[in-house]
Each structure stands twice: as C-alpha cells, then as structure tokens.
Image (tube, rainbow over all chains, first blue to last red; front, top):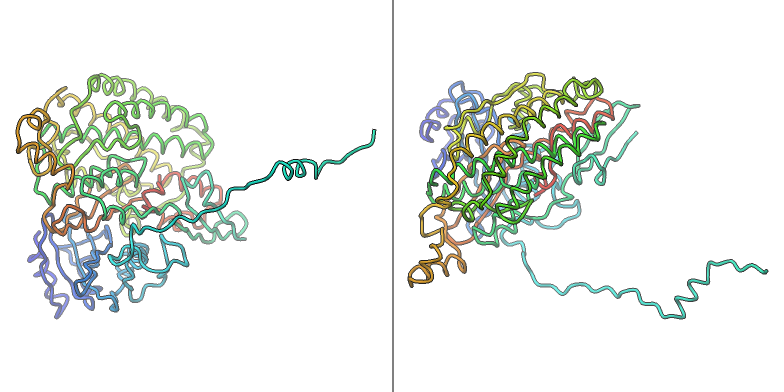
Length: 180
Length: 385
C-alpha cells in the first residue's frame, strides 16, 4: 500500500487535514500536521482496510539550523496487512506535539525518550520526566547544537602520599601495647 | 513497604532499577528506572563515518551483537540501493542464526539459574563457548566480531569455518534435548513459571512487544516471515508460537526457536561455498582487491578514499527491521548526503519490554519478579543504548 492510497483512505475520516507525502526508499512516508496527529493515528488504527495495530517506534531527528528544526518520526506496523508506515510531524523548538499514548500505550516511554534527548514537548503526556539521562541533567544531548567531543582538561586528583613516618605512626596507632 | 531492587542486583541483567511497592509479598506497583547504562552510542555514531558505526551498534545489544550490525548494514544498504550477492546473504543468515543461538543460550542459562536451576548456566555457557569460538575464527573477536559490513562482509570465510559450524550443529540438538530434559517437565521449574507474568496478545502488540514475548502470547509476527530480508524467504522454517503468554510459554517458544535456528543454519551452511564473493561489487563502498591496489593507480586512489574519507550515502532516511534474538531490531538512519550519519536510532526490543514490566509483575509475588525479568530476556545495553 503506497502513501497516496493511505492518504485517500484517511481523507473522509480525518476532515481537513493537509497531509503531505514524503520521499522515501523503503515504505510510505506521510507528513501529518501536529493538530491532526491523534485523529490520524486513531483512524490508522481503526479503519478496517488499514489496521495499523502496532506502534513500532517513536523517534526524532534534529535538522538544525532548518526551521522547524525537529521531525518527530513514528513507525507504524499493520500485522494483518503486512504494511509499514512512517508518519512525520514537524516541530519547532517552542512548539508541542500531542501525545499518542491514548492510541498506543507503547508511546509512553518512547515519547519520554524523545523529550529527554531532543526537548520536544509532548502535549498531554502524563509523565514527561528524564528517562535515559539523570534527573538533574541540563540540556538535551541529541540536539545538534549540544556540544560533543569537546576538549576539556581532565580533573586531576592528588594520589594519596604518605611519608614513612606517617606510615609507621599509622601502623602503631591502633595497636594496643601490653606489658609483659 | 517500598523495596528498592537494583541497580546492582544479580538478576536485573545489568543495571535495571525497580522500585517495588509491596503489600506483604504481593506487588502493588513497580516503577522501573533505566539509563544507568546509557552511553550515548547514538550521539557518538553521528561523529563517525558510516562504516565506523558497525562496532558501535554491536555494543548496544551486546548479547545479540551481530543482529544489531545486520540491521544497521541493511538500512544503509537500502539508502545506497545495494543488492548483496547470494553467498553474502546466506552467510549473513547463518551468522544471524548462530547469534540468536548464542543469545538464547545466555537467556536460558541466566533465566533458569535465577529461578533455581543453577547447573543449567554451566551447560548453556558450555555450548555458547563453541559459538564464540566460531566468532573468533571469523574475525578474531569473540563478542563483537564486526564481521558484517556495509556492502557485504569483512573478508572471506576462514579455513575450518564449515567444519566448526557443522560440528556445532551436529552436537547442539542433542544438548538441547538434554536441557529440555532438565527443565521442561521439572516440577520446580513449572511451579515457578506457569501462570506467572501473563501478558495477552492484544496487550503485547499495543505495548509494541514484537518478538518472542508476543509470539508466546499468540501472535505469529516474525520479521523473517512478514518482511523477509537477506533471503529468509528461501529458507524452510516455522515460527513457534504459544498462547498462554506466561513465563513458561516464553520458555517453550525460545527453546523451539533454537531448534528452528539450527534448521536454518543447516540449510545455510549447505548453500555456502567454502570460498567465493564476500562483498558486493559496488566500488563506492567496497575497497578494490589488494592485487589491483598494488598495480593500478585508480584502485589505489579508491582504496585510499574509502579508508580515509569513507563513502557518502545519498540523503534520505531508511528503517529496515530484522528479527533479533529479543524481537524486532531495526535501525532508523538519516543521511544528509555526507560521509557521516546524521542520525542513527536503534529500535530496542528490551526498552519496550521494560516499559511493560510493571504490568507483568503487578499483583504477583516478589519472588516472581526475578522469573519475569528473566523471561523477558532484557539486555540493558540494548535498552539504554
């Protein structure tokens, strides 16, 4: 099933959504406007001829300095029809993308990871916390403007050095001396 | 009572942390914390040349190393539009199946050790050793051979490869019977596994668990059958399934999968000639043969370019999944047309399995947590990347 056929099947169900067929080498790619994402995903899951019952993956790519800089990528799979589909949603640095956790619960952690790594905010996500990075981490490491392979002087810690007198004193300190 | 399990816990397969809310021995809720093994491989990959990413991705799912590199190589080859010669496809299939056996053996050993059958680990490790020896023969490296490359393989098969593989395949089915004799009807094992950690088919698919966990719950989805790659459509094998969706069903599915892997490996090794082509003939990606490098100027230049600058990949994105030991492995790659990837993202089956873990252990006993974690066969390197 190619992208125009899927867009045609979606047309009557999701009203007024401006889909855009993207270039691809493997399987159909469709750009979805963020405000229509949940309706589109619900339709893709429920239309009998499509039945995309599995959300395989949610990820993102940062195309900095292009604007909008992020593309959130959803990989869908229809096991009954043996078809794969890629949805893409463009997101700006300030903009948000709605969560699709109500359509496929698997999106929960996947969206959390995208927020953690890229800082794309998912609207309505109940638990948007750090997932892979520590709780107190600053910044979003997968962004292209996040520094990588910077050269920084290694912190040097003095090795433990003891003089012979200190060493002897240390040995003697905890010993109890008994009179013969 | 709140119990903190892990991250340093022998049965969390690395560094998984679970915060368990208990009522007596019953688990009320569980919160997994991951990220302790996050090494930023995906970020690092963006700084490397295309071919240099192979050793990196092999370190993600470190028990199924070569299914990572196969998924990555297939994705890049998709963007490059490369088609592999038949012999390369067959060798890749063989390597992927041997890797599945090695990974399942570690799962079998650790999973049964954690629920009491300690000697099982030694038996499983014994056979895995032979598989690691085959890896060593192939590439001189036992865990992460990096033998699969973009554009084919690293080099031709070594001498003695067929003998080693055939010797293993002759020995292994009998050993598999031995394992099953130890566990399948073992009363203690059955009591620890039957009816524990049940997941339904609908839940498994809704939570994105593609792989042995979903197949143990009644799904027949296997990438090798649904979206064949590397010539799997020409092999004769079955996809084992079960319907109970509990720990014991996962055990039976994986055991049966090992028998199927042996079946595929036998077919593959019969097809593979001891020597022949080991890469495609695309001069953009594959360096010219050494005798030409020494005699022809163009070949020398090409050789130099490939090893210094690397090759460029046409702009675009691709996702080619493979059936890894833990389920659907796939690498989503984005190229901007240069000699380094713009984005590399590995779809991690362990990540999905840990996300659903609280659902599997909720309402169960604390002693069953270990059995359930073992049965999901998670690898934290795969989960945290």
